[in-house]
Image (cartoon, rainbow, N blue to C red):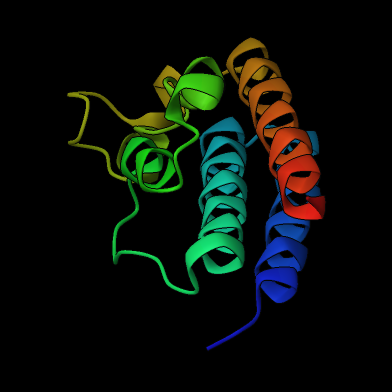
Amino acid sequence: MITAKEWLTEAEADLVAAVAVAEKGVYARACFHCQQAVEKALKALLIHKKNSFPKTHSLIELAEKAGVLDKLKESVKDIDSDYVIARYGDAAGRPPLEIYDAQEFEKRLADARNALGMICAWMKN
């Protein structure tokens, strides 16, 4: 199993990837990378706190298991569904490329950065 620090490094790499992909105008995939960043950061927090995490991609479930859902709910509520909707054309009834735009990405990026900032602070304690 990789360490909490390694999960956090992967999370930060996903944020870098999100920005790079968004610069090409592929906002759905960029939003997916924001979701992945938060998922990996939450898994890092769970390893830090409990030495394990459940097999799920749900940010809500991961945050709840880590005992931080109340503090992260606003940051993860929109990003949570991007694991599916940003990747699958039939998940929301229309193609992801029609759903996501620069404004949606900027909101997801801000939420992901906020979540990662809080998670990093909690892991220092």
